Image (cartoon, rainbow, N blue to C red; front, top):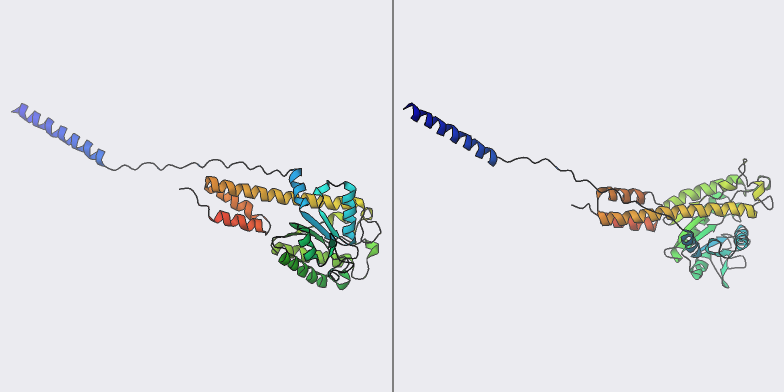
Length: 302
């Protein structure tokens, strides 16, 4: 009898243990969350070669008056291969007021007319404009209004043209005349700089500051006539500034383009974030707009 009770107790305990084991096995388990590691950002190389720079300037034109003629002389002195040998649409005494096709207007291969039409004949992708010296007798406010009209007409006639405004150079301190003085020069440049930040595909290059002396006027070593005209040494400083500015812009654009390319390819959140950051730093331009539109279509890979 005692043996029977012991056997019954063993059977009951065994059954209970087995039931518990089965129940535990059937209970749902919570698996630890796994964090997906993102791949390291693809390194971006954005070197701009001399060949690329020459190609850029080859499809460009420089517009200006007698100061622009000085630029042309300097470029010819440096040789035909210098800066890709851009087109020089310059003329002594050229101004906004005579931009009509007369004897003081700029021309291209015999064609004389308003700058917007001359540029179209030249078939360039971008223009570097340095104007205002022969107009400043009207005061900086009037010249600024003329400048805006000039830029708008240039873009309207030449679809897709990119404009670079080279700031108006300073006047030699002892050679200031009436409104052609550094006070008006500085105010005009300040307005142009603000305007270029808002206008799409219009850039501002400050060539004025590196040409100034401590008084704020055109440095003696950079003036050829103690007035507004510039020496070869001055143009060297000027062109170095332009070259450096363009190289920096091209490098930024190249970097942003590659970042967008990688964002589209890998579709990771860090690649997309980097692309957005680099694109946002670009100047207000068609390039920036196109890259932003491409990024809008890129979604993080599930």
